Amino acid sequence: MNIFERQVGGRRYRVASQSVWDPAKQRPFARQAVLGPADPAPVADLAATHTVGTRLVGDVGALIWVAEQLDLIKLIDQACCLKAPRSGPSVGEMVLAVAVQRACSPAAKCHLAAFLDSCVPRVSCLPASTFTGQAFHRLASQVTDEPLERAQIEIARSIIRRFELSTDVLAFDTTNFDTHIATTTSGELARRGHAKSKRSDLRVVGLATLVSETGHVPLLHRTYPGNGSDQTVLSECLDALGKLHDALADGDPRTRPGTRTLVRDGGSWSEQLELDLDVAGYYTLISLPLSHSASQLALEHAARRGAMKTLGGKLADVRAARLRTRVGDAGLDRTLVVVESQELLRGQKRGIAVALRKAKLELGKLERRAASGRIPREALEAKVRKALQREHLSAFVIATVQETRGRVSLHWYVDEAQRRLLERTRLGRRVLCTDHHLWSNGRIVHAFRGQWNVEELFRRAKKGGIAPWGPSHQWADNSLRLHTFATVIGLTLASLVRLTLGSRKSAQSTMKTLSEVQATLVRVRTKNRGRRATVMLGPDVTAEQRKAIKLFELERWMPTLLSSMDQLASTTDGRSTA
Image 1 (cartoon, rainbow, N blue to C red):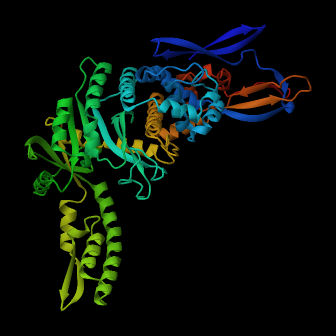
Image 2 (image 1 turned 90 degrees about the horizontal axis):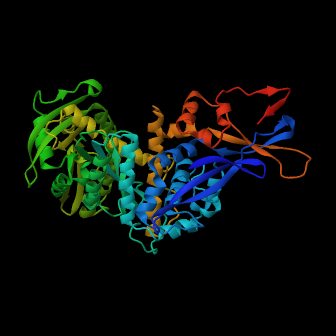
Image 3 (image 1 turned 135 degrees about the vertical axis):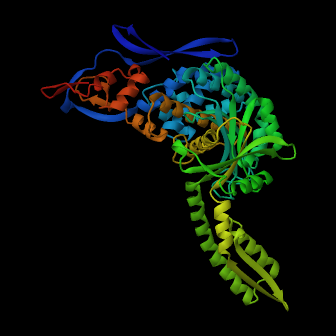
């Protein structure tokens, strides 16, 4: 967005111009909008003024600045190849508007126009009234998975070029979000599955995300049916992962781009997937399920005297044992690292203590019901299995169901020796599996902890986060897909804002600091005819906010911010210059 001044009828006005890509004609076209007068603000008596509202500046302006650095609107429009409407927003403009709304003031699409009117920075030269829910759904009905995937690849390439992110380690994980779509509403994405919220009465939509090791920046995502598995989703993303690998190599500023490693949890383990990732050009690092035969072998190796060794530096509280062996029927050559974390051990022991208290109460009730003969054997065995199915309870709580002369009885006890053995050999331990044979134990552990980046991103996308996925009022698959795409774009922009600012604060705290940079609207009471003059006053800013104003060029939207940076209001005889 370019902002300049123009003289019309003897008065000067600030004008914004925007270049929008027309896929049909394969060339850009221009839009312009008048931002307001550029003449000096009037001098008025403070007693004759009153405040009429505020306008967002800091957080919206920072997100739009990042989007301009990436040329986000053009990349999306070129990938989607939709005919650009002259009277309405393009798909790129709509996605950016929704992304900014979700990152700053999450609400339904029917409130999008009101939100854009409350912002000083503009995502488009079009009037805010053109950004409606109907316009969003019309655009969504024309967009499919393939163009959105192309857009993601190009955006990732632009991010690497502009912000020089390290992409040597990429973390992959999945989550899902609750919808309130009725069961009778047709659709492929909203399905009943293993909901993260533990609600079985709602249909859910799945989201798989690939995140950079630094900055928590999403580089690739996929919206999938809520009843899909991690393995299936990652398998379907292999083609996109290959394209992403090439795009990141092309955008990497280093003369010798590093190899890339895909980090994921045990839910996506598959021997065939390991081979496919190797073909796509990725090293792998995964936390194997403890029930896997290779995990059992590694845990037995770690149980030997002197096998577990303490790591140094920031990982001084972590011990690890290393083993190189063949994994699976395909005989994959892998390095297994058994990691013992005291923090994880303490958390698991707390979980076991809580689960054991509940199990004891349940087993006591079942024991009394069995003694009174009010429960059949099959039902009793099923309820015992259910009571002991969580938190490793079945490993040390011994329950026996017997039937004598037609009477069923239940006897149970806690085997403390088995419990101590479990704590010594399994609890607090993970088995990491990788084909990085030359990496040290510390590097492997540090890379795996990058999986936290994805979990942190998902926390931002949940209710109360930076760019929450909900509330969502979409019913069609295409709308759900474009809504998710816009939400992830909002998360990406917020992550890059934090990275650019170089703040040690969390992304949520950083966005809150920027949101405090607001313009105050002041109107002058006069007895003269005509519309009353309304001017914007800048706020007092902190050192961090002053840095953000310079970095994100917020003064181009509100020139009076430059005067507020001095934090000295010039007042003379009760009069103020706005």
